[in-house]
Amino acid sequence: MDEGAYMRTQLEIAVSDHQPATVVVLAGELDIATGDMLRGAIRNLLRRGRTRLVVDTSDLEFCDSSGLEALLDSRDETETASGSLRLAGVHGVLELVLEVTRLRNEFLVDETSIESVTALVVDGTRDVSMV
Image 1 (tube, rainbow, N blue to C red):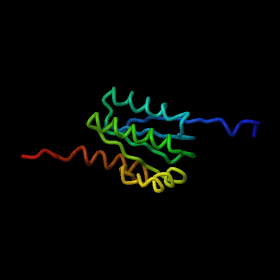
Image 2: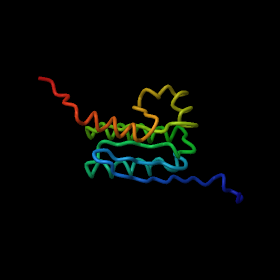
Image 3: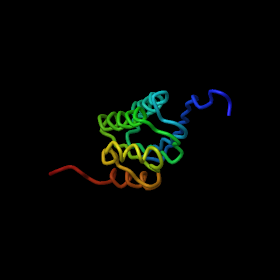
Image 4: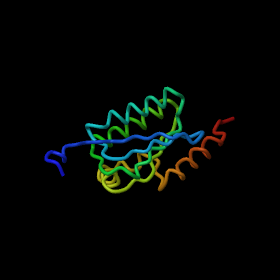
């Protein structure tokens, strides 16, 4: 490891379309240095009308309270756009942060992104209007 390598913060974001849902895969570290990357990616998707979102955290190696805040902000912005955001693959530090902060129930969480996409497709086909 190079000297100072411990200070490198990197987040990779990959987006794939699975009509009618969009999967946002996070790999690396979600923290104060990278939270705005996630917020920006989510805003761009919402602007394009992509409001059924899955954030796949299977490859996320680290998440601190600032990263959790970015996830909460992303969820809030999605809901403001009349959309839905689900988390998939929650594990490790993110799972611990959600438990310790008692914010686990603030998110819809699935084991895999396939389960999340399926849930969004099923939810999207239900008629929820009241007569």
